[in-house]
Image (cartoon, rainbow, N blue to C red; front, top):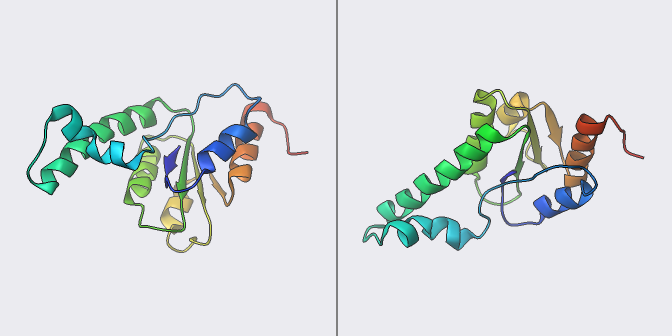
Length: 142
């Protein structure tokens, strides 16, 4: 599950899919840990560019591996911030031919290319969970 880390949308989807036999994975959502993983593992950098680059490259290994192994990819765009990482993940998923569920609120114009590549476009975590449930079991919401 890719995308914004400022809300509990992942937890809502996981809870709503609780009885399904699914394995969920996603990015490191501790912002500081994600930003600082490179220098924590590979050593301090004097310049912010190289500090960020080390972290981005380590996170890219995690992200690419996760996207390549995933059966279905869910990407969420939140209300705040420009989420280039989520857009990149959606594009990478589309390039891999992975089924993509995109979710956002009130950003349809900004995300029209992502939405066009997605097989499902949802507005809420509950809709994502219902879509996953249907895809896996064939059951409609009650």
